[in-house]
Image (cartoon, one colour):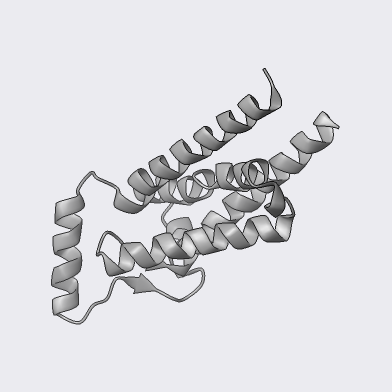
Length: 151
């Protein structure tokens, strides 16, 4: 397979990943209507859908590890963004450095969190940003190891 075909394959894979990420992480179609109604109701009584206190959500999940939400959210928020840390430097060669990759990840994650908040699709949570960025960092580590193996 020639280099341009491989490059195109990586770009298509990245586009599919981004679409799936938006659908399953931001929109979360299961329970969407009831979640939006709940957020709208909470806002009407003065409760807003955001957490700006670092580690508040994470520590509550760690305290109640028996909860299925805890078991899904902590590893899920990390795992969902591992491909970002790997695919961004592969697809966008200009952004191959760790700093540039992590900046792009942060901008995308902030965009997703702001979209969830403003569209009442979910909660803006600083802990999600921390977990998602951990995933991006792990993905970049995988990319770095993969790049060393290739050279």
